[in-house]
Length: 64
Image (tube, rainbow, N blue to C red):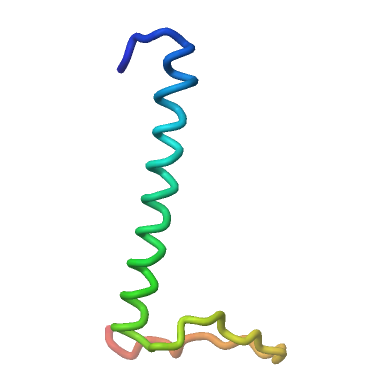
């Protein structure tokens, strides 16, 4: 917790927080994309939407 004048919070702390949040978001986006490329597939584009009306569910587990 910080006790500081509102002007200091508005002009110094909040802009710094927003800049760090943007940097963290960009880093996590890049990291996520890299993990998907390496672990799953090089194609990280959006998947095509299916026009099928059938529901596709996972098969029931046979292990009990």
